Image 1 (cartoon, helix red, strand yellow):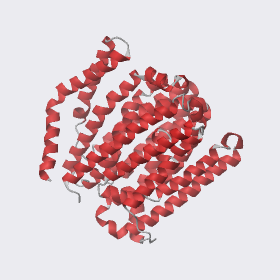
Image 2 (cartoon, rainbow, N blue to C red):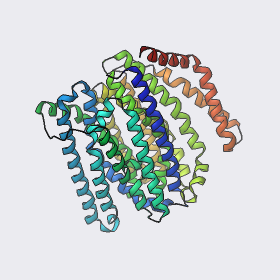
Image 3 (tube, helix red, strand yellow):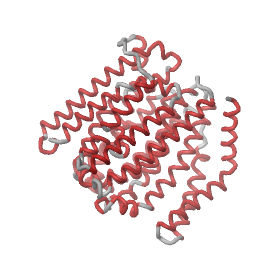
Image 4 (cartoon, one colour):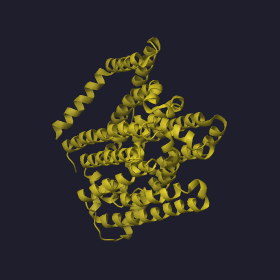
Amino acid sequence: MSSPRQVLRSFFYALVGGYAGRIASVILTVVLRSDEVLGREAFEPVILPFVVFMMFASLSQVGLMQGLLHFRDDTQEFLETHFTLNCLVSVAVFLLTSLAGLGLWFLFPDSWGWGGPVICLLGLFHLLRSLTQTSEALLRRDFQFGHLSLLHGFGTIMALGIAVAAAVHGLGSWSLILGGWSAYAAYSVVYAVVFSTGVWLLRPAPLRFRLDPSWTRKLLDYGRWLWVGWILQSFVWLYDKVILGVIVGESELALYENAWWLMFLPTAVISHIIFNYTSALYSRYQDDEEKLSELFETMSSLVIRCSAPVAIGLVLLAPQLMQLLGESWSGSAQIMMYLLLFGLARPLLDEGYGLLWARGDAVSATKIMASQALIALPVIPLAVIFFGTQGAALSMGLIALWGLCFLWWRVSGHITVHYRRMLLMPAVACVAAATGVSLAPAIPEVAIPVFCATYGTTLLIAERRRLGEIFARIQQVRADS
């Protein structure tokens, strides 16, 4: 088992590597989206094929990685079984994805003559990425997040850098297939090659194919609800884009996806950075309720205090952000306002799911995702039909809020969490900051500094005692090591 010092060092490297990749991702995506490089027209034919591919790619997440973390002490007994199952699932998903791509191509040659083959190509490289999941799980088990973060950051920069170079040389939409954009870069051709090669070199998996019946049942039984939950979660966060692409068309979908990307930044740059680390940490302390309660409350409090002001700040800056990207994206500014609730609620979901998975309560997590999917299934098409893109944006926020309330209720059945302590002061600080902005001149050069200064000062004054407690805990961890 990793020592506290190793755990702390791993967290530090995860943050450094993760943020390096995220910052580069934001900058390079802005360059790609700008009218001078690609603009909206190049994105329009690419988004829907990418989304459809990602829905099929979610089928490969059968919970094997989480299963290895859950049964971490017995890894050597089932390692070959884990690798064999992972290969079988990866190949099956590739075949299914290719079948879907070819089917769309032959059935709808006019609208999917380009998108169908793209789905097959992305599926082929995702197969390469999927085959290394056993190696990646072993790295996570040993808290090698420094290496993983470095690989992810390097792969992201390489993918987006090649995308920009390809765009400059006139490849248009194909540059996005090569390197992707924003979070889609992790599903691109270049990223799949770079990340998979790096993971395999760091931790080669056993190449022997063997299925132990007992461990096969254990891994699949543990992962089946995670698998269903992952499919449902992917459906919930991608379904809106499919509906918009089908009902309102590629152009409006591109505007919505641009706004969605910006309002997803609080999740991407805060929640997702620490989630891979905290999910492994929750698994490590899964049987220590007191420690688990403390960890969950600390990490969730961190996410809340960082993500809420970022989401609000993005809405305040929306017109200026659209000027930076170019005139073709101006329609995204209003959509961002309707996505504010989504931007506030979405970052808080991952920590709760990670805790339920660590405690072995994947059934509850799946029920929550299923409830969101059942709500989304009729609500989003109706919202789009009657209220257009804004209706889809507001619906996504309400669905995220519903899932968060349901999730926290289930988390409370496993650990003790003081939600008032987690939420009250950030809410007070946000209200104070918003009030300060309303009294300031309505220009970004004044509004944003006023918002940040008011939020930070309010939070610092109200929580100086708690910040001291957190610092004392870190010092104690270092002393124990």
